[in-house]
Amino acid sequence: MSIPGMSGAGESLSVPGASLLRLMTQKATTPDPRLVEAMAPVIEFLGKNDPLGLVPATVTVLQRALKSPLAMFNAYARLGQGMVQLQMATTAKAVGVATEPVLAPEPGDRRFTERTWSDNAAFFALQQTYQLACRFAEDVLKAGSSGDPDDLNDRKAAFLVRLATEALSPTNFPATNPEALIRAFQTGGQSLVKGAANMLEDYVERGGIPEQVDSSGFELGDNLAATPGKVVFRNDLIELIQYAPQTEQVHAVPILCSPPWINKFYVMDLAPGRSLVEWMLTHNRTVFMISYRDPGVELSHLTMDDYLAQGVLTALDVVEEITGAPKIDVMGLCLGGAMATMGVANLTAKGDKRVNSLTTLNTLIDYSEPGELGIFTDDQTLKRMRARMADRGGVLPAKDMSTTFDLLRARDLVFRYVPGRWLMGDKSPAFDVLVWNADSVRMPATMHTEYLEALYGQNRLARGDYELGGERLDLKNVKVDLYVVGAINDHIVPWTSSFAVTGLTGGKVRYVLSNGGHIAGVVNPPGPKAWYEALPAGKDSTTGTAESWRGSATRTPGTWWEDWVTWATKRAGKLVDPPQLGSEKHPPLTDAPGDYVR
Image (cartoon, rainbow, N blue to C red; front, side, top):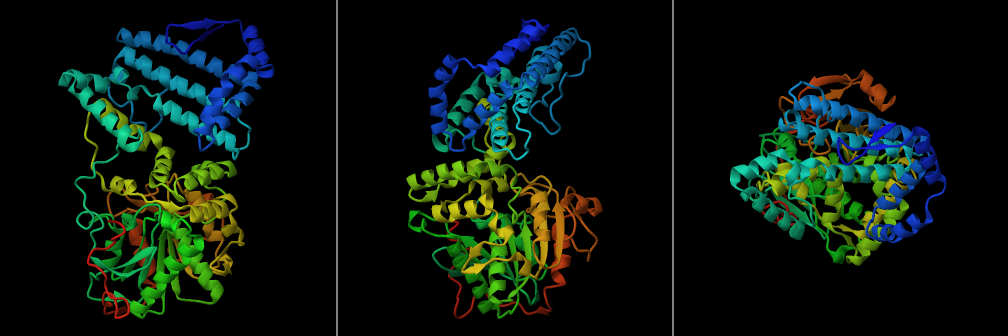
């Protein structure tokens, strides 16, 4: 039996099948103590510098794989078969015979679209060897799988292996990237010099993460967060922005927007023509927006109670005082949507009925299936995170959370920028969403720990035993109508998890599934690519599973923004003259929304 090795298409390792199986069995049952002893310092070092515990988890999975000799034998056999097929395909390619790849890239994988990868026999062999190696790594993980889809070690090992294989892609190295080589010849090597300078800058300024976006052409108040308005209230935690009306009359019920405090508020007011706030204003609504402060160490003591009291509840009081409206619609995004939901539940427990309706966008309420973020919220990881925040004065550095979200989609948000920026010396692209994505804030350790432990760790909100603001939050008592948006490609809040809220509250729910991901599903203006899925108007979404709901839903061209306007207008009251900006009690403080943002 011949099993090709990993070093090249022409090398192979000849081992009789029975001998290989016996060798693997021996290694699985009696690991060489000298190897274990030699690796111990390495594992210990990596563990201390591995806050997520990825290395220990991967070691555990590999140990399980070694105890599954048949599965490992199959993994090696499939690799060997693929390499033999690759030898024949590469030979055919070299003599000009049309041939199909042994293993095609995944759909949507843009790394190997340059024609050299398919036309040149050497680069074809390199790309295919990489693809086969990635598949072999996946086969080894399967061999060591526990069989439990929720097993934390399996998920962490898969995350680390995916990072490693994507980092080792031949597109990330100048000698094995044909586009980089062509550019180097065209520029006489100047592209490599510029790329090296970019890489050095990124290591010094960004900890080795390539710059995603050129933000030099963007300015807050000009082409970002540009919708006119005024700050009408400020406390230690928030500013409240009231936007200027854009229609002669507005509906009597105003809207309070609750953004996440991981990044800045203006994802909901991104840019002219791409602003959800602007869209609501042009459809006869009065809009207020919370802008959270970037907390320093002096606010490290803030809790979830503080974010409720000084955030959503205080903002509701100010909106009511300025507008005189007895009813207020609330819209929340992601973490801001969770806080908005908890705020409504807190008010309901007090008998306060000011909230007219609730809209949540890409929001987790039931944390039983948190998706890939689950690997960041186990007990040991939270313990390491608490220690890290304590070392930094009691706050989570802004870059930590930003990097976490980037690594969840490392191919698109990290390694995508390596070839252009580091190998070819290109300037980073200019894109408003990425400017906002890089504009993250710190978080108080006390609040952040409580949030992760109580919600991600214990799922207490969905269970109905979470206390906030002195009240037990029972979502079944929340009777207001809900409009819930999920996004089909959301990697932070899987849409099937966001759907779970439909069975938790006591009100009528309209669930809508949008195209796009966590952000593009929200920044979703009318356009040819936009679509959404929903049940017929008036039909409730509170029964059945996410899958059964989708089986009954209908896809409609266009944006959920349009569907939401139809739904919200029915609940928004009659048309009246717009309220003035601010009031005698809460006069406008500045013409520039969001001093904390600036």
